[in-house]
Image (cartoon, rainbow, N blue to C red; front, side, top):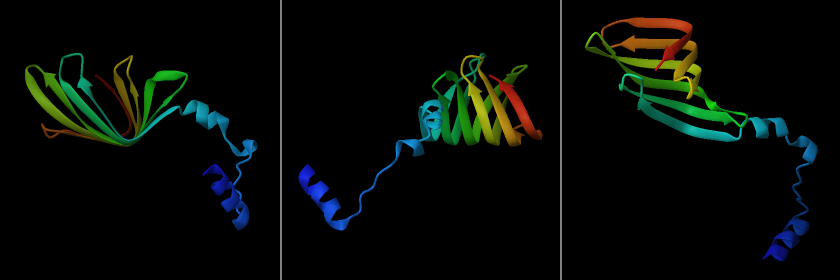
Amino acid sequence: MVAALIAGSLFTKQLLWTPISAINMTDIVSNQFKMSNASFAGTDTNGEPFKIKATSARQEYDNPNIIFLENLSGVITRNTNGEKTIENISSKSGQYNRKKKTITLIGNVKIDSSNGDKVRTNELVIKL
């Protein structure tokens, strides 16, 4: 089988080689864990649920507590003085810090709350 594959490439004269110098090792090392259509769910320190979706998410090998998100959206439930508020969030990118339990929203940040409040900003940190 292997001989047939090698012979086939020799007859067509289409050998595909990737030179080692063309491989970006920095990108490979720093983006060890990458996901498409990622979804994260959990509860905040008050036991209220949250859910985050992103078109892509990645973790760096040397910094596993930070999850870098692209095109994220999500739902966060807040309980203030016994009243629950549901907040729909979205932004161009963000960072979810699993250790600190924070989400940093970056770029075109939008928050629409069930109580009618709206937030529009370029950067916002949410403590879960």
